Image (cartoon, rainbow, N blue to C red; front, side):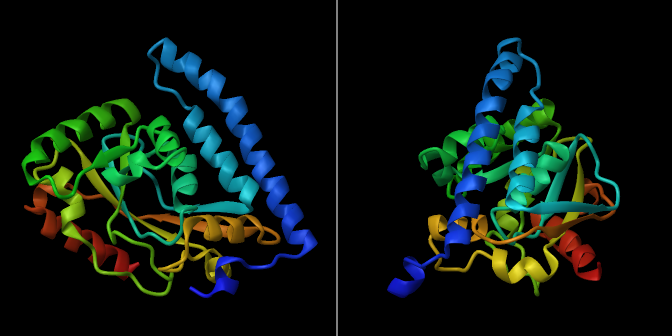
Amino acid sequence: MTAAALHPRYSLAANLRFAVRLTGIALALLLALPVHGLWRLFRRSSPWPMYFLAAVAWIIGARRRTIGHSLKRDVVFLSNHLSWLDIPLLAGRNGTAFVAKSDLEKVPVIGWLCGLNRTLFVDRTARMGVADQIAQLRDALAEVWSITIFAEGTTGDGTTLLPFKPALLAVLDPPPPGVQVQPVLIDYGPAMADLAWLGDEPGAINARRVLSRPGTFTATLTFLDPFDPADYPGRKAVAAEARVRMLAA
């Protein structure tokens, strides 16, 4: 990227929006952490990560619109991926946790926050650890009831659905008994150009750009009909079925 892109200049109004939103997110975290700690102290499933992430999406300007019926438990959501905002939007809607690559666990602050939301960190290179990953998925579903996988493996531009990466679905091969798969489509409408995470854009620059954006926007979550992954043997078949349904929608 160019030096101008790495160090963009913002207006006074944009800098004020950034400061206000960042302060709002910090205050929401400070309010949520103590009560979340109390819930965990008494070994109860805490709803506070969901409340905090819903607040983050709202503070940034997202106004969520939901189409379809979201399963509440024993479900793995397969979603497209457009922005880091996908995470607070989805988790703020139904409290879902996420599958993420193990490298993210080591990122300061971000890895810690992901851990608070019971993120399932998966080493995609550890072929011998599939059984352990499936066991982790069962434990996570028992704790938070739902898991989300961004099946494209990267962020798209919102105009096309990228090919799915079956390797990301290792935790569904074979699937835990009774678990359903539900495809989810995320759409930011006209705001997509402002929110998209460009391929070579540093995360801090993208976050600053999104937090400085004026006004609000509608974020539509479309929950498609769920299906039993046991009816589609193998992770490739599960990925293909979910993608077909999402393309049709």
